[in-house]
Amino acid sequence: MFPTDPPSNPSRRAISLTLATCALALATSACSESSSAGTGDTWAKIKARGELVWAADLQGGEPYVFEDPKDPSKLTGFETEIMDALAKRLGVRQRMVQYNWSNLIPSLERGDFDLTLNGIEATAERADRTLLSRPYYVYGETLAVRKDSPYKTLEDLENRPVGTLNQTVAHDILRSKRVEIRLYEGVEEPYLDLVQKRVDAVLLDDVIADRYGCRMDGVVCLPGDIARGTYVAAMRKADSELKAAVDQGLDAMIGDGEMERILTKWNLWNHRQTDPPPPILEPVDRARSFDLNQLGLFLEAAGVTLQVSLLAFLLAVPLGLGLALARVYGGRPVAVAARVYIELFRGTPVLLQLFVLYYGLAPYWNLDPMQAAIIGLGMNYAAYEAEVYRGALLALPRGQTEAAKALGLGPWQTLRHVLIPQAFTIALPPMTNDFVSLLKDSSLISVITVIELTKRMTIAAVDLHGWLVPGLACAAFYLALSLPLSELARRLERRLARDQRPRTL
Image (tube, rainbow, N blue to C red; front, side, top):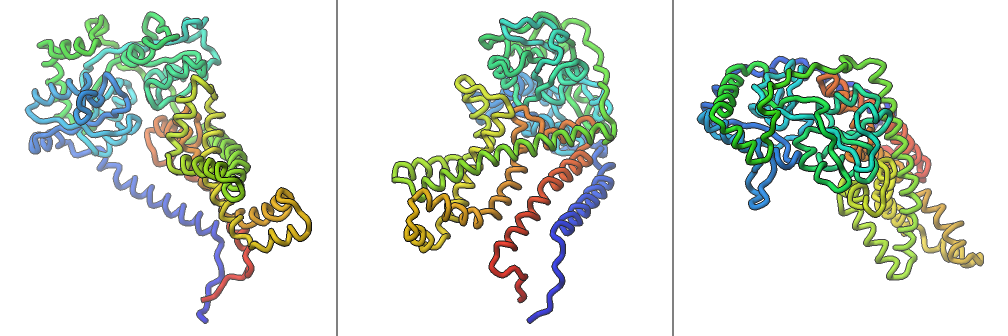
């Protein structure tokens, strides 16, 4: 028999590993900080390889950059045509790479591509981080409300829910007002929620409002611009030669009318393009360090995460138990129906289920974001819990049922007093592990405007101009929520084991 070391505390090991990981991340960040700015030879590399690589997000949709409906293998959109024309004037090819819109600037700073051009609004904060090209489009912030709405200005919407996109000028404007901000990932979803009366107004660029909001039944776009700004291309700070080449190409396109032809083709040419361009927007008052205010916001988001997870699991447990009983003891039609439910919810992504529940069923079943999050996660995890309980029920000795019959217990009495209590004893450890998984999967509910821990991290990352500290804070909060549950699962496993002593080799 080999000698064994004393058992160590699992929580202590996990915390030590986390601290080591954090230290490594900090060291890596410090070492790479200078290299992320680039060496300034990007333009020379572009000319050498004959290709300019730029980034955009296809989720922004029409008319920016999107897949051609006639040939999905090709891209179209007014920004695609601008890049085509710009690349020709620079004497190179162009190639677009897909990145999430919120990560365009950080990925640019990492050196993942040469420049980004995708509705990037010129702001003083972006000018501090990157080099901004000369403007190629002047937009106006458009306020949309319902046709029967009494609201005519932003001031009328005090303490009312207003939708917009994160990391936009519209978001900055709303942060300076006394409104309840709802953040979205897509451009159409805010207007769908406006029609469903989940928000009272939407503030976004006129390019988006004209395509997705103003044409929608029940929505009216108020006249006048809340503010004006410009779209620009962004490049790394060291790439002054690339900026000079891009500015020269854009100037030439504007000078010979090619830019006007492109914008006219996409119904974007308007009086704003001939007016004097607005100045770069001044920065809003943002947090510059992870202070007590940021900590309070993370605590609030952690509370939302925990609340949604608890309520969703309270829904998943009885629903999962009912499905398990239906599969094991129900008749064939009932068992088949239960299996169809389980396979459907286990075989499709929970993200898709949330979208269908919140947006797809909105005309028939209008849920608020928290209700949709709880029901969606609960119904999804019920399928997983059903299999846990079914396995626990099948693991019980057949003699338990026979003994219950011998005692004169009926089928329901046998289930209630004999089988289900023993099955729960077997299922408790995996149930605890499932709750930890649910806690982490709750990060997906940000797609339906719920600001939980992960969404709070992305907002803080924009405010702090960095992802490391908010990311570590988010990880710390998740660990603080999940480690006690993991320890509970281990204790239950040890207590329910026949031999509670650790086995030696």
